[in-house]
Length: 281
Ligand code: 2HA
Ligand code: ZN
Image (cartoon, rainbow, N blue to C red):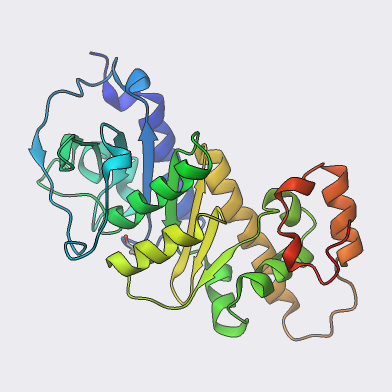
């Protein structure tokens, strides 16, 4: 076996965690990432038949959460209570690789060295993976963080999918191009519960980005670049929104401008047209 610490997916998640920490999105133990790995890419680094121990799910017992679509799947997941700033310096302590067994139990294959466990949000992540995979079989990443400007927006902005999507789309030119499917918004809910997982996964039928009001955001994608890129693009527009603040807005993208972008990038079939005052195009 090759040295797992040199596997591209381990290096990639380390780089991601450091970037997120440096952007101020993951203070203390804030945030979590899960990365669906293919057996093919893992096999030269890890024997997936060797289980270290089982890790029970916490907080979701009473809910009908069917893990069967994920049976056999292997995930690289950040650990509970771990700090993103430390991940790159000790991946084996701060990360774990787990496999969803045929009986639905989660087996640890590598990591969480001092007896740790996956993030408390892993059930929510699994529900989101199931949801996104049903829409896009190539989805591999679910990530959660606390980006400052998006989070601040939830204190002062109407919390509907339509209002939030329109504000972000019209405050930076690239937003409608990067997430024409918009952004979903959940009201404040208790994190770590089955309920917030179910609600987030439901939103992920329609969106790759879901805001948790007064808390943070979830992003999903085929790659780390896609999921991270979605969040940083939305976060940038949110930052501009706050810099503009309550001063009179003299210039802003119009619906006509958005439509020009949509036609230029030929993304007509991905746009949430129902968010437009005039959806004709
Ligand atoms: O993992 O961000 O929502 C820490 C959190 C919980
Ligand atoms: Zn959080």
